[in-house]
Amino acid sequence: MGNIILIGFMGCGKTSVGKKVAEKLNYCFCDVDRMIERDNKMSISEIFQEYGEEHFRAIETKAIMNLRETVRNCIISVGGGLPLRDENRIFLKELGKVVFINVSKEVIIKRLEHDVTRPILNKGNKEDIISRLMAEREPIYTEVSDIVVHVGNKEFIQVVDEICDYVKS
Ligand code: S3P
Image (cartoon, rainbow, N blue to C red):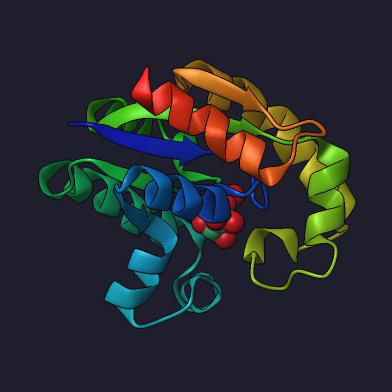
């Protein structure tokens, strides 16, 4: 289907990197969380608050399932929790090539220090939650991905170019 799906932990840069890759390659860009917010006329936080996480996860699954029918040649950014459901990983694979943007825990903690838009980080000590979730999720992200981009100390544009090179290869 010619799509590239960006996965990775909250704050890893899926959206900003994805937009730039799309611009450089002349692909369309789609952010699944923003699409969910638009369709439901509610923010992710409001959906969690009003209906709970399970409901959000069901909406997420439906969204990724539907995308298979509608998008071609698109850079798609998905929420950090989406690859956790078995069925979603199947849908991701059907949708296109999966790129895992791997950023260190230290950087993620710093980036999300003052964030209030991710409801699952607001239930206790943020650093502890990030550490636990990253340890749980990293093997899943790695398993489902076709390529892992290790961000390390790379500049933003280097990460973008690495993904562009992969798409063109
Ligand atoms: C979540 C990540 C968020 C959003 C929701 C849950 C998660 O997306 O889908 O808050 O479980 O990791 P981002 O990864 O784009 O922040």
